[in-house]
Length: 338
Ligand code: KG4
Ligand code: ZN
Image (cartoon, rainbow, N blue to C red):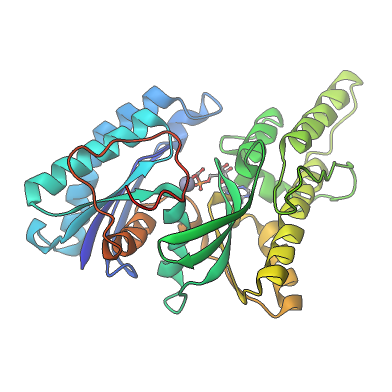
C-alpha cells in the first residue's frame, strides 16, 4: 500500500510516499528555518504562507522522483493535530483535495504518533509493545505503545517541553533558531558541573516532568553574568543545562522500564537528536539489558515519512476521515476513534 503523506504542522513542509508503513520511497522536505531565524522563532503566519507556496510543488516532486503516478497512490495521510493551527490547516486542506481528486481514503495522523512511528522506518524489526520517550519542541512524555494505535501516557511534562527550553535558552545565549542543535554542539566542549541547575521532582506521578524551573535557572545564570559583567562560559552553561534535562528524562525512563518490564525502548522527536541525551539513554538501557531504538537524526525532526508510517497503521485500524476533517492546534495522542 503506497501512502502519500503530508506534514505541515510547524516550519517544515514535507511530502513523502511510504510503502506498507515501513519503506520510504521518497521524503521531500522544504525547511523554512532560515526564514524564521531572523525572528528568533517561528512566525505562524509566515509559516502558513510558505506551506501554501511549497506544498503542491513538493507533492509533484515526490511523484516525479519515484516515477509513480497518482494511480499508484492508495491513500493520503496527513498531520491533523497538534501544531500551529494555520500551518496544520494548509496540509489538511491539501490532503483533502488530493484524496478527493484521486478518489482515495484520507487518513488523519497525530503528529506525535508520527514521531513514534519514525522508529518503524528506521527499525524494520520494531513492533509494539514497547516504551517510548517522546522529546520534541512541543511535547515531552513517556508513552507505553501497547499497539500501533493504542497508547498509554505514563508521564508528561507539567509545563514546558524540553525542546522549547533548549530553544529559549539558546536564543538568550545568542544562538541561531532552533537553539537545540547549537547548544548540543556547544555542550560537547563544556563542563556540565560548572553551573548548578535544579532537578525538581514535580507532582505525585513519578513519571511527570518539569522544565520551566530549569529554563528560568539557566536564564537567571545568563542574566546574572551579564549584570556583574562576568564572562559566561557558554559551552559549560549548555553542558550544565543539557545534563539537567537528561537527568529529568533518563531516570524516569529507567523507572518506567523497570516497573513495566518492557525490554524495548524507542526514542522520538527532535530532541532525540541530542548527543548527550542519546548517550545517557544508551548507557542506562545497557545496564538494564534493554534494547534501545534511536532513529537517525534525519528521522528525529519533522518529516512526512513518519506520517506515512503511522498513517498505514491508522488505516489498518480503520481510522480514516471524511471531507469534514478539521485541524487542531492541540489534541491528545490518545484520541483513538475520530
Ligand atoms: O520534533 P521536532 O522537530 O518538532 C516538534 O514537533 O516540536 O522538534 C524540534 C525541537 C526543537 O526544539 C529543536 O531545538 C530540538 O528539537 N532539537 C534539539 C536538537 N536537535 C533538534 N534539541 C537538543 N539537541 C539537539 N541536537
Ligand atoms: Zn515534531
